[in-house]
Length: 92
Image (cartoon, rainbow, N blue to C red; front, side):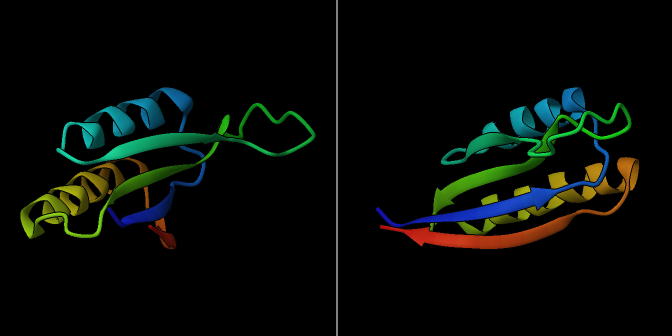
């Protein structure tokens, strides 16, 4: 089954909120999430421990599920500021 992989980044979002966001997304059937740790070599207390969130889902994900993803991401954007969303790959 072909998979879509996306990178979601909220600047300065705390680890606990990234975990909450990942848990909300995993409630959608077919969604798998990974938290990617910060890669910086120097510790900065103001910087999140998470670099970004990756979401994996089937290419044939129903449009209703895609709308749920968008609604969840937009909810967190309203509370914590904008986010960046990039398509990384399509896996076979």
